Image (tube, rainbow, N blue to C red):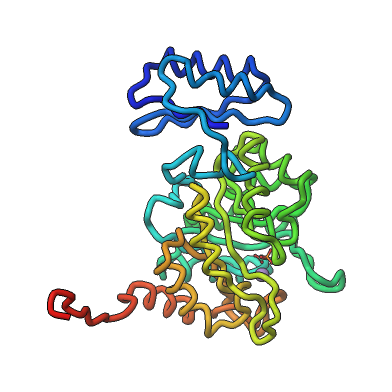
Length: 342
Ligand code: PEP
Ligand code: MN
């Protein structure tokens, strides 16, 4: 249930409602908006009728059920958009943020040349996998700690905050020491033990959508993070499984718009995994910008043909510069019909 406070309700009235929500057996999550406060009562073992009775409490405008199964993630609980700070870079503040870098960190030379080049072209954050979720156990699994150390060094020298994937609860502390943002990969979107653990770290999380997950399941995965105390979550649509075989996955653009409609969390697109084709990355990136996505994450490699993972979908350094230039161009010249004379 949510308890919408009246505009300008004084602090002691808000506090009284919070106390009553707790007494009724729920957790109270307060959002203090510019105009009014919203108190969300979350939990499964409370006494609902006691919440309903709060309609009569001083300063309360209304008590209404939360329409969706995800609660803290929903815009009903927090209408204002969330802005996530990743090592000083803001995601969700209205600017279009570009995260770029190799699928996997392979060597100092590969990481540094990519980082320098993507930064010069305008990327704000660097990505690079240290622990890789590979479909086959015989494929390159990532350099682990060595990659984390390289990411740490490159951040210091080049000055780009870094995003890297965490696959296991065991690695959380180590990765937190080296990275600015932790990525939960598509395959781990419903790894609930991992989500519960990440709810307790003070680093932002990039939560990828599972290839077969509905938007509701994706937002409920994010709910684990918020409910456990981590509110710095960015959602990433990276393509879903469909019958189409010409693209690696189907980048579900409508779901980006829908996730932004249902949730206050920032949402970015990953057109690299979402299409598997470098030629489709610029048009899909422009489409993501057009529909209001908060940014993109793109795989870039100095020599894609030599990449140890995801080479075929990686842009080379020039390709990334061209992508950045095309993102700066107007989407399309559109002759507007004069509706007055039509
Ligand atoms: C990646 O970002 O390299 C990755 C493995 O992504 P996903 O989890 O979306 O497959
Ligand atoms: Mn990849």
